[in-house]
Amino acid sequence: MVDDVLKDVRTRMDKAVQILRSDLMTMRTGRASPALLEKVKVDYYGSLVPLNQIASISAPEPRLLVVRPWDINALPAIEKAILKSDLGLNPMNDGKVIRISIPRLTEERRKELVKVVSKRLEEAKVAVRNCRRDGLEELRELQKEKMITEDEFFRAKDKLQEITDEFIKKIDELGEMKKKEIMEV
Image (cartoon, rainbow, N blue to C red):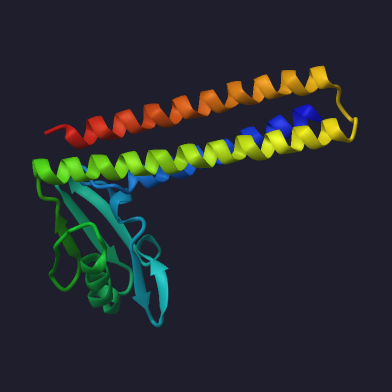
């Protein structure tokens, strides 16, 4: 029973870290990355569709993204969606593809991005702590129903804290790597 609770908590914490990792991948640094446009949603025939489902996105050069839609009629909608996104990118439509040159980040913009990364890291840590709290409540419930002893409860509680510390450390490492990547000129 205790193992099931700990396994469930570990799974949920891992999911929180995976969400953070994918979120950080979509954040703009100085380099072009197709992941940058992952969260852009395009109004395609009346429904919002992720850009990567209606076009291929490639990075042929370090500072250039090329969006090649499968339906040429979607070009204006894609261009509008990229302009409306909070990425600060300026798409150039040549009638067949959209080219997006990634400008160098200013020092001010880098610092803003580091603040955004810090905010996302804190949100992920809160999610991990919420998982720990839920696991602790489940363990208390098991103890209250006399399904585990007090000693088992305290051992499980210590193990739960070890798991939490492990995931907080992973979050910090991800954050440090992303901050370093952003501040790199």
